[in-house]
Amino acid sequence: MKTLRYIGIAIFAVVMCVNFAACSSDDDDDDYQWDNNQNTSQTDQDQNTSGEDNNGNGSGNNTKAEKPDISFFRVAAKNTILHVDYKINNSQKAKVTKAKIYFGETSNPHSSVNGHISGNTIWAEKAGLKRKTTYYVKCQATGEGGTTTTSTTKCMTK
Image (tube, rainbow, N blue to C red; front, side):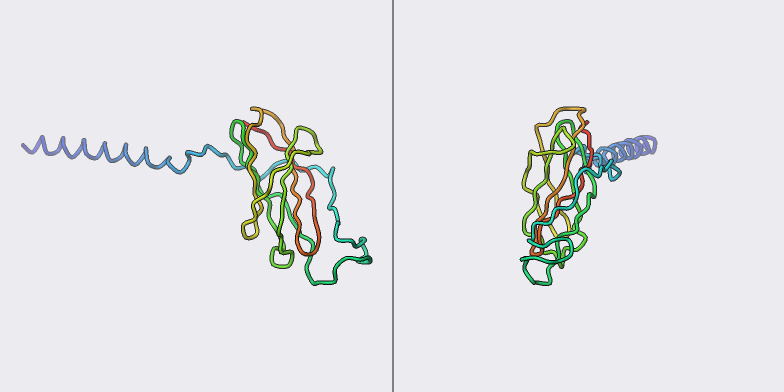
């Protein structure tokens, strides 16, 4: 009888180990692989649409708000989907109200989707892309102090 008890305990232990191993991958079901080290080119420069020149002269509003200071943060790629995140480095002073993420196969992407603003992050996802294809992305954010466009970042679908 003791032998059967030990066999039962051993089977129970094996079942529990298998169960824990199977459950440990539940968080990875989205198959995203984050990559924070994408290539960034300098083909695009910040664009000032606040009405002021680079010296602060002009008809821009005189509030203390700043232009958004945004930078590429990371990308996650699936087979035909890219998910990109941008960081708003001055979110309290820029008060970003609108954002667009541009995707394209050329270094000057034109197809855009609305960016989602959450705290100091702007993110967007683009589906229906080609597999194993290089795409270029950039972000344009508008706040009380004006509009800023990031440089272009090179990404690749899986």
